[in-house]
Image 1 (tube, rainbow, N blue to C red):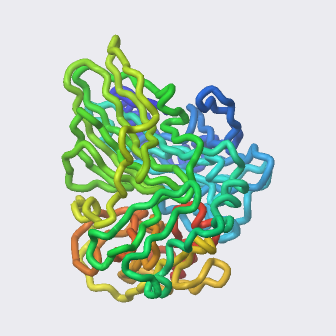
Image 2: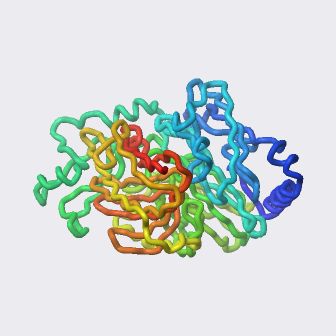
Image 3: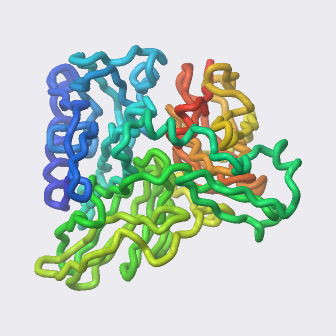
Length: 493
């Protein structure tokens, strides 16, 4: 991943300012677009070669934009099958949003398509809006700098997280959706099924699944939360495992902005900075009131920005711990000459479940909240599903027979996500940022973001101002859930 210093950012900002002062005919019409290629690449996964997909920009994986720079990109498909890329968390015109056939068709092999819009600054990413392709690692960072970034005396480090299997995505899905072995009880029931279970009954996990008992939570006695429905072969930080982690050169006593992107298909992580104190300053590209700590959770598709102050010289592991399991990945920040200790890929004990009581979400406060306004329209969205059969729904329906949520452009809309299943769901809305305004019905002035995790048997309410009149996708960002149809739309007229 590309590293950034204050000097480099200042140069990029000066170049962008110079371009901005040129006549319009010399900028918007003639400034060259950046080339972005959807292509295959080879990784070394613990000594074994793996062919995956990716997005290659002018300077390596992903794209970095200077302050004020437009998102002007020519996307080329060098893959053997059609694809299309979604600019996650950005708000482009709807016809550039990157959902196949909504409204533009897939990009065929050998084709190139142009994009041009004013991007939101912050930590974002881009990925195929085709679940099986995202499971092939067809994703990359998208970092958009704000003017204040150029003046900040700090180094930027991107930490891009993946889960990985040597098996094909089709084989992974077949394993996940296959019938449980004889004698195993059904798990992950929705509320109707739970009503038939005795208070003390416990379910058994399918192979590759970890569980978290919720007997200590009010109303959850005897119920089992499903944390992971597949054991991946490797967990990657910047395409590497802990057997050979990336060691990022940092300055003695320097400041680091760590930009963490969870691009995994189906894994929630805890970010653990160990002995290095951190301040969480942004989520999903949106600033929050800083929160001090050394461990923060991140669900699929979410981003965390952490500010770190390095105390002198040394080496500091930054670990990503798999929720409900011992596996971990990460990178190391190291000053010149520092000794880097070898790190085991397994922790001593399983990491706990993340935010099942919404404790982290409740602490987040937006630095630039939405204007206070009564909602013009409210929707309740029921999240449901079962592990056997493997079926995940929104309002009891899959995408094939979904009912759109309706709104009019300019309306203040509130959406309550009510999770009636025993898996958490990271819910993502296209074309909008929203603010978390209630947790389990309790009003808060929470973070602005584009992806919010809704734990089992909990509710999260978000508010947004309806934007462009168009069809905007609303879905779970757990790829096996999305692959089996957990998607609907916000239809704005």
